[in-house]
Length: 174
Image (cartoon, rainbow, N blue to C red; front, side):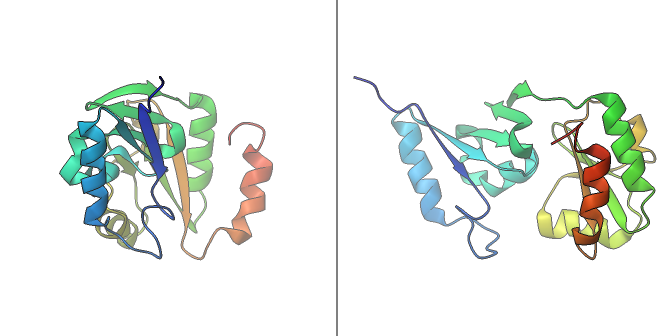
């Protein structure tokens, strides 16, 4: 007889609905019950690893994490799989976003995200609202760990910039 070994769930829009920032305590009880039965719960999200660990703090050591839209997988505190971006393409994307006066760039690593903020409010948003672990660096091109995910933030939304970036990078990245 086959039995369930792993249950994965998306976070935003699934376990966190309508802009809620914290998980219902019942979820932790269910995860604990799964753990007791030998079933691994995996939190799947576009979020950073440290962000997810904080969100699942009561059961943080008992679950697996699929982070950054599948770029990183953690289990028992170890990164067990990692998708790395091509360095040349990543650097071109970082430079392009940095040169856009209306954009902020975020480079994701294993356990932190790196920024060189143009505006202090961007850093505050990432740390206080999003709850990411953020490292401010002088130059994003000098980060020593591999690039796993690069994100652009546009204060007024992405609509007016979407086509420009799609035309430039569509064949190279997803």
